[in-house]
Amino acid sequence: MSDITWGLWELLLKGVWITVQLTVYSAALAAVVAFGIGLARTHRRWIVRFLSGAYFEVFRGTSALILMFWMFFVLPMGFGWQLAPMWAAVLTLGLTYGAYGSEVVRGAIAAVPAGQREAGIALSFSPAQQLRKVVLPQAWPGMVPPFNNLLIELLKGTALVSILGVGDIAFGASLVRNATAQSAPVYTIILVMYFVLAFALTRGMRAVERHAKAGVGQAPAERSRLRLRSATGPAVTGTAARAEGEAR
Amino acid sequence: MKFDWSAIGDFLPTFWKGVLVTLQALALGSLIAFALGLVWALAQRSSLKAVRWPVTVVTEFVRNTPLLVQLFFLFYVMPEWGLTLSALATGVIGLGLHYSTYTAEVYRAGIDGVPAGQWEAAVALSLSRRRTWTAVILPQAIRRVVPALGNYVIAMLKDSPMLFAIGVLEMLGEARQFSSQTFQTIEPYTLVGVAFLAIAYPASLLLRALERRLVR
Image (cartoon, rainbow over all chains, first blue to last red; front, side, top):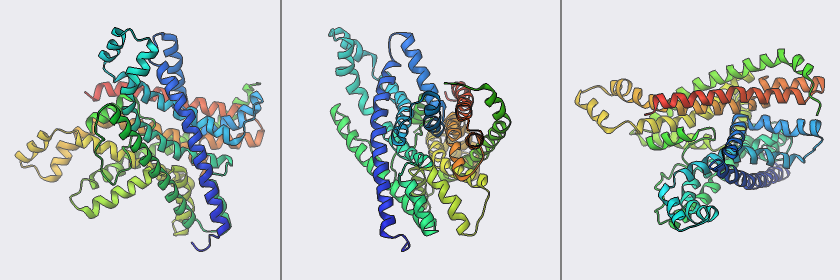
């Protein structure tokens, strides 16, 4: 480990900063997409449901890395839109994980008892008011744990950008590997870095979850101290995830 | 945009080779993930803290770090330790190991979902520990989680392009090679993207149908 000089450490730390930025921007975009598409999938009109459902299936069906290549190489050649690598990556990750997130939003909204919505109608709330004042506040606590899972999947997904030359942690590691001609130390270090980032994200999301649950008068969930999160991956469809949840 | 259909024709022969490698990696990776996941799940139920603890820590670590970096780790570090494998074998091991930490949770959920009465019945019949697991618990647990396992196969399919980063010529690798040789980028990447959809979407429909049959 002594082979890694201060300059190389600096490279890795710069990579951490890029990874954090990528995660934050992509998560912001993904949140917008998740709520937009998730709400559209519960819309009254079938055409809106159909189009948003098609978006979900397309982005869930393709691989994020393929999509990233497409954004990097096909978009400039085919349409003449050259995005900065960083933004192409954010766009890809945001659109992909937003699609996964839309399923979380849709499922959580569907889980709010119908009587709540009916009560909103009885109080002559407009649809927007029902959503904002009745449905979303109750659906939100249920969304936070799956969002935590997705956030960690997103963090892991940011490593893909290193293949396309964006200087994130994984990219920094390849430079350090070339410089020191040793692989074990640097890759161990960056795996730990990613784990620490995931750990920090989980802690943050738990605080959000506690706050959200307190808002609707629920106690926080009990968890094993060893576990970071429940393991529901991005590809798990709503029904299977629910079956898994029930089994648990 | 000019979409050159003849480029698709030129790409097809190597594309099929890539499809074959992708499916190979997927099949072998799934086997490892299914087998190893069960091992993790059972180890986490062990009465020995010395078994339970390290397994939980290792699976948590593997699950919360990027597969891509794990692939690089295996690909570069294993040879330093004197174990040199082909890129495909390394990729299969990486994929299988990474997803085994997910399938472990799936098995765990399935095992926890078996009603307590089944355990008690096995005790009442004085079945041995082994018979209890193989004849009573696991058949019921696994039946319930087949759809969830299938979902992770689809997730693995979508992560398989990462294998290209360590030099496996699967679909994306072939597309990259083709485009660097012919300077035609639009067609191969689009074809590969569509191919993923064409495999993943029917597979997810199939799983939903399977789920209706198995999980009740």
